[in-house]
Length: 474
Image (cartoon, rainbow, N blue to C red; front, side, top):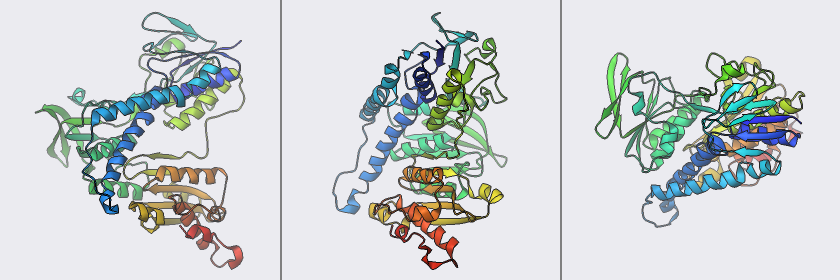
């Protein structure tokens, strides 16, 4: 019987272990910390719980608009952390696939500390315990990137921010990708004075320019001070009861001070202690483990999946990679983790999300039609008083299929999933516009955009084609 050793119990590792066991392999899952990894214990689970609390704070401040008289909401952060701990515990027990893995016969060993390779089939814990497998799947994830600047040890990571015991009065957030933007948004809602620093020309640089601009404007309207193209960090220094960032902008030395500085400038492989040379596992220039389309590393019996490979570092994509790695480790075949449709988004205020190609990338390969609909045109958004944002649809003029969907606004992440399903099903905008979506819902903005795109594309064609009037209702 094939023996599979999985290292790491995040989404990739858990899925790899479950898949290997389902294929009949004797499977052991070892992890340095708790089952569920970052996703359950330090990532989407607890972060989304905090984001939900931030949302409740914002919603409470709207009550007066709807004739509901209450006092100003007051956050008890310790009680919130207690709720977050409950959420993390329940996710670990119910939602992180632990019952399925145990039922499949996976041997789970937690809190072992960082393991290191002794040879290509064996790893050793700090206590000297050894685990082996004919096939090994590395899923140890990633860690926050450090900056080589003096005083960096005075800063915090996003993990430190989530673990605070009280809400800081002020905060510097350096880096405005998904993590930095979410930290800034959540703590702004909790009452922290937040300054968000981005070295590039705009925040959320991987999103469409309109998305970046809309989120930046909303952040500023909510009181976040947004610095784009801020310059170069010279150092971090102690200052009063907090930390000071010294930076240079256009040759001028400047300083920003706050109770806490959170640096979120990227993610690197959590591979430093694995002793990969002992297993013959090669890494690429950025330090991520090299894998092929089958998730196989440079050592034939060792596979890797998830953030440690540097590919699509998100939980749903890690699940796909873990499944593919285990499939090849035990049964071979042609399964890969690549999917044509990969929706992503973040629970900031306002939310933003995307799936598919951006407009510029689409125009390089296709003749496109671009339609944008504002949330301020949508019945549900008007009812809820959440009219900030838009839906931008990028459509292939030749076949009417959706190439990309980009959103800012309430429930944007959920709406993007509807677009993802439509794209995966190769629906045309004509098809999607004719789906009688419930009224009024946020996903109606996608129906409206599809109907607009279909009408434009069919203009001059047979009027009887009926290009989705149902979508216009929203």
